[in-house]
View 1: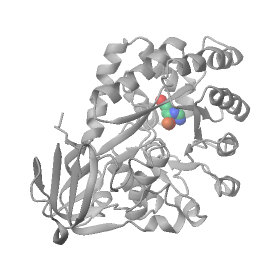
View 2: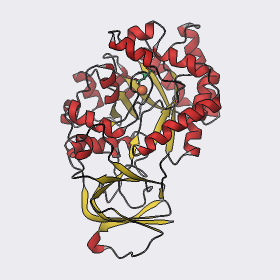
View 3: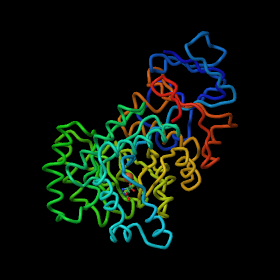
View 4: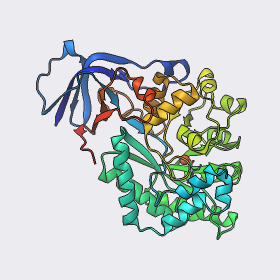
Length: 412
Ligand code: NIG
Ligand code: FE
C-alpha cells in the first residue's frame, strides 16, 4: 500500500533526523517545506521533498493537497481515556463555587468515577472508550497514553488497563498505558492498607500481565504525599515500570522533585511552580508536560510556560482527557490554550504537541515528526491560510483527512 500526497501548501515539522526533544529557544523553530510532496509506503514515511523534485508519478492512492497543510499526527502523552461516565453534576457544583478539593471531599471527584467504573463491565467500558478513541483520531491524534486510576481495586485497575490495551488493538492508535492505582484513596480502606495493596498486589499483577509501561501517582495535598509517591515509584521500577507523575497541579507539592529523583520520564500538570521546581528540572531527562485543558476547566492558574522556556527547558502539551478536570480530547484546543493563556507561540505549541510528547511516551524514534522511516501518522488540513490558523481559530475544525500507519482512516 502506498500513498502520494502532492501539492502540499506546507509540510509541517519536517526533520531530517529524529530528535530526542526540542528545548528552550529551539522550540521557536518549526521547520516546514513549501509546495511539497509526501510519499508513504508500507506504513512508513518513505520520502518527502519539494514538488519540483518529485519523481514518483503513481501510487495506489494519490491525494492532491492543494491549499492544504500536512502535519505529523499529534501525540497525546497524558490521558485518562478509560472512564465509565461523564460528571456534569460536578460541573454545576463548580459553577456554583465549590473547589476541586471540596467536590472530592463530598464524594465526588475520582471516587465518584471509581464507583461508576466498578459497576461497569469490561465490554461496556471498552465500547464507551472506543467512542472516545475514534473521536480523538478525528481530532488528529495518532498516539496516546492511557492511564488507569478509576478502578482502585485490583480487579478494576486491571480491567481498565485491559480496556486501554484493547484500544491499541482495535483502532489504529499507538497506545501506551500507565498504572495509576495511586490516584485516590478508596473510602473503605486505611491509607496504609491501600498503599500495601498497590505495592504487594497491584504492581506485581500489572507487571506480570504486561498491562502497563509506566507508573503514575497523584502527588498532591489530600492525595499521595511525596514519601508515598517515592515509595510506590521505587516498587514500580523494580517491576520494570517507568515513573510519570501527576505533579504540582493544585499546590507546590514536591511532585517535581520526586519525579526527578525517581528518574521519571515526565512530570505532568505543573500549574504550581516555583524557582526551585524549574531549577531541579534543568539538566534532567524529565519532560515537563503541561495540561492546559485542566487549568482552563478548573479555573486554576496556568503553568508558567515562558519562565520554563526561558530557563531552557523542553515543554510538552497533552490533553489530560478525563471526566473530572479536562473533559476534552482535542489537541488543537490545547494548542490554542498554550498560545492564548501561556503565551507560547504556535511554533512552540506544535513542537510541544508532537516531538516533545513523543519523547514523553518513548516514541521519539518513530513518531512526532515528518522524518523518513517514521510511522506514517499524519493529518491533512482543510484549506487554511497558515499553520498558525489552527491555534488561532480556537475550537474550530481544521482537520480534513487522517492517515495512520500509512492508511487513510475512515471517519467514525
Ligand atoms: O489529571 N489530578 C488528578 N487526576 C486527573 C483528574 C481526575 C478526576 O478528577 O477525575 C487530572 O486532572
Ligand atoms: Fe491526569
